[in-house]
Length: 210
Image (cartoon, rainbow, N blue to C red; front, side, top):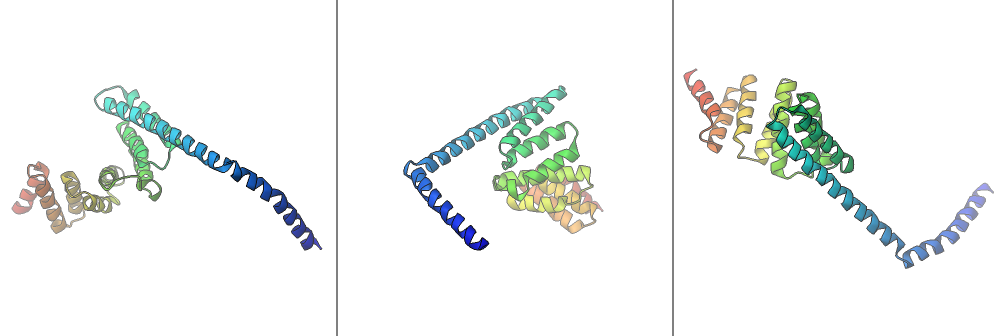
């Protein structure tokens, strides 16, 4: 009996809702609603980009100034961008760079982890992802003694083969692990990309003399 009652209620609900949905579709209300949602998304996206550009300008100024508040303001602008569009990796990278400039390397590493997560990383080009991986490797070397840095650098040079600094840092990581042949090859790759790269040239000379 209870089952029959539920069936009757569902049937009555369907009878009521079908004309309502027909009315909505006839008057293009769902399409209008979706158009409004798309417009709101575009507006929030533009607002996020505006905060990002301002934050990038502040970060550039902070790098050539002793005013610590500039980096703090850059971080705040990055946070505003993230609140509007958390899936754009560029905003997390901006925050990471602002945090690093303030000396908060562990927090900067956390922001780069988010930028390189599956949710956000797809917004990056291969070259941008390579640069972000290189920066994360640098921070890992500074914060957690290089744990995971080799993997980041191997992927970085795979995505962007002309970054001499990435090859150089990869070679340093290999040296610390006692992997001399791998280190030698990475230094050679660095010199191939940038023939005047002193770090790689001096390291290879050291290998020859040892």
